[in-house]
Length: 294
Image: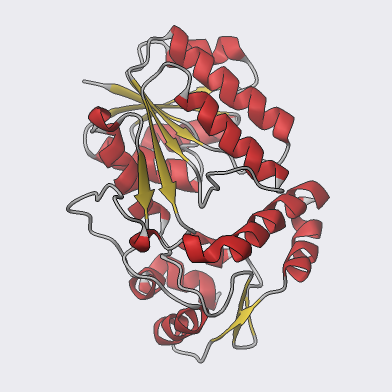
């Protein structure tokens, strides 16, 4: 039986991958900074270590006997820390003779240099993984539906979000994205390629409002949130650096939105037999719907 190391298994995206692998009978290992997460992970059949990605020696222990790695690019805007984490993860995988790394870009990612430093650092780190000598597959989801769970985005019958109102986006949820990652982990012959991971439909802002209206039973109108206002609203919650990083990501999306409809990309690898969830059906799931009515 293979052992797959899943980074971020106590989070949303990595957790979805770890649960899917465990449900398929795969031996899953992870690392978490917090002891409290270990019990929850072990209850899901995941072998959890307590440690810090900043400590290479700890990662060497975690990688021992690992066949494949799912590397979740962190939502981190301290670029020095992100570099340290990724380079340590790659070095530990190299020393353990890992056969394959599947990298989750964690959302849209530019292919060329930009004027957004945090995006460029992430892109450069992914290139570092791809050039490590370890076979690598990059999976690029679009935007996660879970982002709609940020408190305050829906207010007084309005859905506020910092994307253009008239441009279609193929939203995906983390459980569906995990299906793409699972496919990549089971198809090492795709090493060197990129899997685009769109959701089942493209939706403009107006269509987002319609989907929320149907699912929540109340009239919801989409409003394209100004980037500066978005950054200002995030700053008290996550700090100035993180807020600027997130807002910079959405500014880049706004500028490049016409090239981000993955359904229009020629020669993309099509992953077969996926059962993907529409936004309306995702919103109607009891545990999700409850969050919008609480």
